[in-house]
Image 1 (cartoon, rainbow, N blue to C red):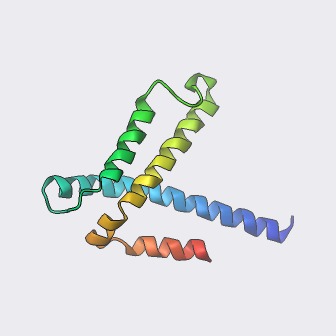
Image 2: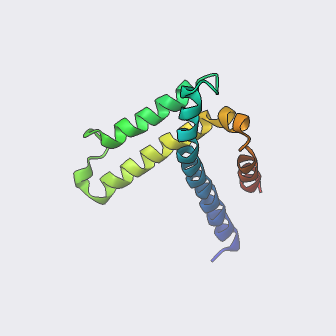
Length: 116
């Protein structure tokens, strides 16, 4: 196998791992952010994060899909990709909150990993 192609595939896998990191971080940060907003400790309210999360939840429970779930694996994979993409948007919308909370350092490490 061509070493250049192998490196390219590894690089793409690493970027997708970054997406999984952002999805996990969105789940970890969204709850505490909601509590801080509700108690008035954090302003401005990140309305876009609430909107992206609501859209992800609505899409997940909605009977309407881009690809119907009765098509077995393809329909479920469709849900995973779309909800995952929406959760990466939640993570991006929470960047200011992470900075305020002091948890931005893991994001900086991730950006430097992708740049390499």
